[in-house]
Structure formats: C-alpha cells, structure tokens
Length: 245
Image 1 (spheres, helix red, strand yellow):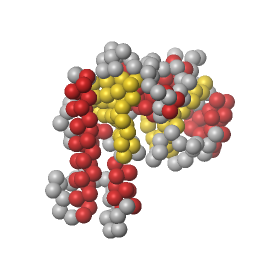
Image 2 (tube, one colour; image 1 turned 90 degrees about the vertical axis):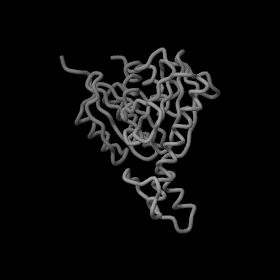
Image 3 (cartoon, helix red, strand yellow; image 1 turned 30 degrees about the horizontal axis):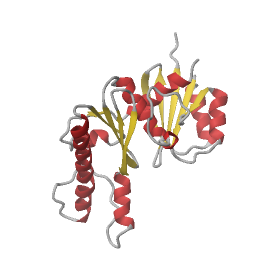
Image 4 (cartoon, helix red, strand yellow; image 1 turned 45 degrees about the horizontal axis):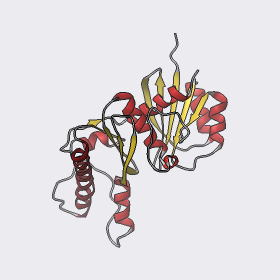
C-alpha cells in the first residue's frame, strides 16, 4: 500500500520552507526560493501530495492557496483550525500560525505534561502549553539575525556580522565581541526564561526548535530536547486533523 504523502509549507519572516512526509515519517526539509505559483506547481508535480498544509506569517501570494486546493486536500493554518488544545487567552486569532503548530507538536509528543517550546527563528518565541492542553502564551524577543542586523543598523560603525559558532567567550576584535554578545546573550536569555518558568510551574519539558537549535543546545545549562523539525511535525499533526481523506 502506497504511503499518504503530505506537503507542509512553512512561510516565515526570513525563510520559506517545505517539509515532505510519507505517512507520519519526515522525508525531506528544504528552503524555497520564493512563493510563486510556478514553484508551487513544480512541488506539486514532483511530489504529488495527497494533502497540503500552509503555515504563513507573511503576505504570501494568494494564488498559491487556490493552486494547492485544486491539486490536493488543502488546509491553511489559522485561528479557525481544529487544534488539540485550547487557547484561554485574549484574542486567540492573533496567535501566529507557527506558534499554533509548535503547540500542536507539544501536545502530540508530550501529552499530559507541561511543555515550554522555544522556537528560534526571526524572533525567539516562548510557547507554554500546560498539562491540561491549554496554550497559555509565552513571550517573543528578537532572534539572532535581528540582533546582528540591529547592531549594524542603529550604530555608525559596527559591522553586520554573520553567525559563526566558533567564537571565544572574551571577544578579541569587533566581530568576535558581537558573536559572543549576541549568541551567548541569547543563550543566557533562554536559560533565564526557563528558570523563571521553573520557579512557577516546577518540572516541565523544554523543547528547543528551529534551524539553529542543535547549536544553541550546547550553550544552555538547562536540560532541553532539541528538535529542529518540531514545527513540521506539528504541521503534519494538524493536517491529519483538518485534512480528512
């Protein structure tokens, strides 16, 4: 019996990505050059997915939604999506699609437990889902690229630095000073936030996700579970709930 193929599209502020699943097994994750109709048609022709789901926090081309719906069982993630948790906060319709996917993954893989999911992207998002499957919210702060860019944009002489995981604690020039300040500063922020949650909620799971999660894991003192593909697994779970064959 041939597997059911699901194409999960994640349109973030910095990158557009897709993830391909055969049944519940993740097969491939890749960056997209654009969100144009031709590229989407190419993915559909290549993978012939039975189901597609789109998580977007940008103003993407509206045409692609029609294309996806024409060639697959399609769902666009929004506050109307059926989710395995409640959102007892003000204005749940303002919750980002990416955060909904992370919360869904937390409930899917760690049911009946308190979970803090830390997403590393353009922004750092802290997403807390309690043991009763309530998404209580969390926090948002600037991500790594935003921090590098802001130092360059809002100063007269500081350069725009690219990420590099080989840096000293004590920087010896401007570049390594910025690397140490930004990356270790983020690590200390994440550790401090985890500590604050722990004081209030006691023991809970911490999931660090996003493309840089495996690198940051080594800089944290707290015990965490690093899974760079956690969001895609949440998208797949939501597709299964909202795209019934």
